[in-house]
Amino acid sequence: VESTRDAILEFLLDGTQSTITGLTLAHFLLGYLSHTSDGSAQIAHHLPRDGIQAVIERQNSSDASPIRVVHRTCFHVIVDALSETFQDNEQEEVAEHPLVTSPAFAYKSIRLLHQLSRNELTAPPTTRYLRDQKDFINLALLHLPVIPLNQDSKATNGTLKFDDGSTVRSSARTLIAFLRYQSELFSLAALELHITPAESNEAERIVKAFFENSEHGNQ
Image 1 (cartoon, rainbow, N blue to C red):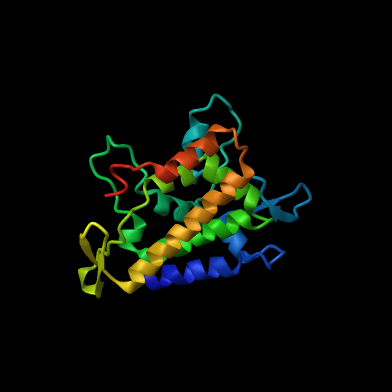
Image 2: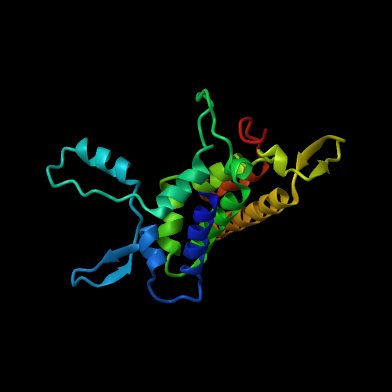
């Protein structure tokens, strides 16, 4: 399963590089394609919410027009996987951060979101979805683990020692993925700050998230 997931992410990364100026199968799988009135394909101006959410939302509406089912795409799956740990304190069980359960997957996923956010073709709908639907960057910063733990004890091959003298078992692969994830997330946050008005609440919240500790996210 992990090798298949890795291959799919590599395919999506290759198909959405900034050097690619046309539409690709990767754009289709991620849900970026829409059609004009004459039937020609184009990049969607916005990404719809998850299919299940969209159907429930329409059924509860007083609008009598037909329900348009929004299919769940690779984009929804990736964002949801990275957001599993973004839960309220009232939740009894909080999911493990993807960096703990699958460091390589977490890194490639955040790298894909960063790549989509800085590509001229996909940047507008991507940044809009992450901001308006998920509050993704702010929550990702708040829930970023501070220690590169490895869930698989058999995969650990070294010990990290911190300034306070504490140590934790980990592996070079986990540490590299952890640092790369941080780099991509910080770059994504910097990009969001660049396109967000400095006086806005959104910019202030992102800056604060760099320095705040989340009790359930940084343990």
